[in-house]
Image (cartoon, rainbow over all chains, first blue to last red; front, side, top):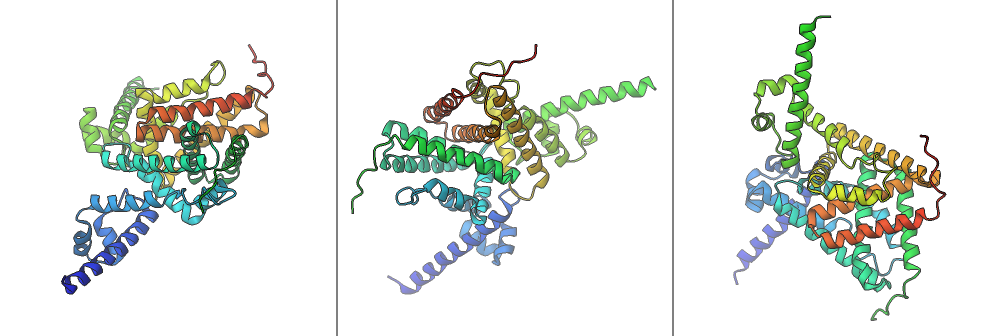
Length: 202
Length: 202
């Protein structure tokens, strides 16, 4: 193996991640609607040529940003097992300053996926389906009967997404928080009838 | 009053509505992202000058389309009083071919409202707040205790919006329909404890 080539490759790969994170910050602030390679190059502080070297086209850069944001928004699976109040933790994270930026961009991405954009639609669909399956698996580990888990996970995620959009748009914290507490109470009511969680392997 | 001027004004006003409906059809098909006065003029079959005469700028045309779509999407208030299964009727309408086109554009509009667009954000916020207040009033007429109505209306609308987005993106009718039926069952469970509807004046 040629160390020089490997070293250069590693440096390029490192740089790609760094540029992508900076470009994602730009999208988190301003959305995707007015995004251009020129603007991103300016914000990130690299030349237009460097950006093209790493991402080829605006569409490829947007696809990379979308993958990153879809992977980081409402990162549920790590919350379900050990947390005594997983829904409250999700809500607190999603409504934090950082969380709101991600939900805002996720909502913008979903909006862009509605028309003439089958690739983006597929990416958002995969994200929703994966998160639903992960949450359903978590609910089953907490004793939810398996045939009910998928519909319940779908309801929970849909309600959370809907409430967060309401909150982001109206800024009406008291009304939306009261609706969230309804959701938490309804989940408590349902889960009271479940068998105790299955033993976790240690 | 000058009849000639009035007649011309009426004719113009009629034409404005006709153009707006055609432009809205264009947006329902293709969204707002690539919308331009030139494309709309071409689709609607009027000159660019006529379009500018009626709507001045692209932003003004988009604002008029948004007002029309926000007013027509999830038109709830007429459903609540006489319908034995209002939620089912809302779902059937929203998931019909016509309903899906409106929900799709509503979702795209909400996405556009997320960044650097305070006017659009205010329009979407007003729409969500008005619909929530109308649904809350309908729930109270059906016996829902007044202090609970606003949070319940917020939950119902958020869940419906979230489920419809899941359905539009994933096309996974069975899973989303099962989640909708959970929502309907939960509303039945809650409303079973309510007082009978207040007498309507005849």
